[in-house]
Length: 279
Ligand SMILES: NC(=O)C1=CN([C@@H]2O[C@H](COP(=O)(O)OP(=O)(O)OC[C@H]3O[C@@H](n4cnc5c(N)ncnc54)[C@H](O)[C@@H]3O)[C@@H](O)[C@H]2O)C=CC1
Ligand SMILES: O=C(O)[C@@H]1CCC=N1
Image 1 (cartoon, helix red, strand yellow):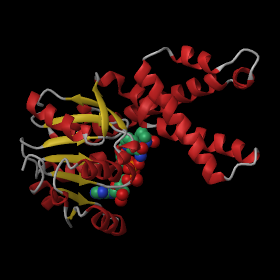
Image 2: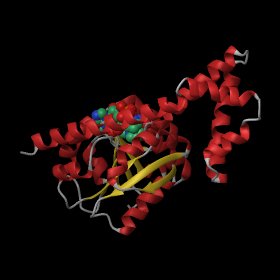
Image 3: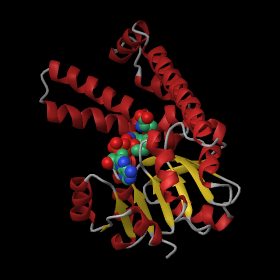
Image 4: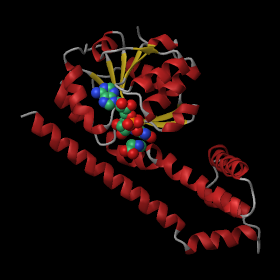
């Protein structure tokens, strides 16, 4: 029972987590249950991974120990109210939504449940995810370890204080999107230089992956790694000068601050919503 995982919602993020979980063999595919009103999505996941398709939230809850709420943030109040009466205190409830706090979830279902707020990202699909985990007080060490193992199956994770979660959204949850834009832009330039597009994606993506691995493996300052590429009077320093002129670093910082501010607005919105629906 311990490794039975139920997904309420399996869109982009839920299905990326499922993909990683199955590839890693965290549990038998039949121990992963999915409820999502999108029948074609559930059928696809069934065909692709052999997971268990269920036709009601009630039976999913009945048959799962770990419950992942992978619906959009605005649906959290509705889904939490719907599942409340079927929950057992042994369940571990895993939230992944931007802008929905542990306190807001507890306000709806009560404080006696084990809840862990997390922020994964879509590279989970290829077991290269990065996630943050914030458990509530009801989570015991062994519950946390189990969730840690689940998240290990699709990448790395860190335990963080919940007050850092908006920062996590900017630096990892939303961040794959900026990196995909970077790959697109690099590939466009390579195409302009005459390279076939498919090959350009390989060059751009492998270079980003290699550079990221250097940061992780050498633990050198990224500035030092950049300097190692810039031959005096060479090509790279010309590109660096051009990027600085266009405000490359500032563009990224501003985008991430906008991302954090949006997450904060979403916190405020859902807090307003949960207080208005709880008296
Ligand atoms: N997409 C991403 O990269 C990330 C998303 N998240 C969080 O993941 C959550 C889901 O986001 P996405 O996967 O991007 O959205 P999505 O729209 O791709 O998936 C949501 C899924 O929920 C299903 N759904 C709708 N109503 C439902 C219900 N009553 N019961 C069960 N399923 C229902 C939809 O059919 C859909 O398949 C959000 O809360 C988001 O903040 C967190 C980290 C990264
Ligand atoms: O865009 C969003 O709101 C979600 C949260 C982090 C990534 N996707």
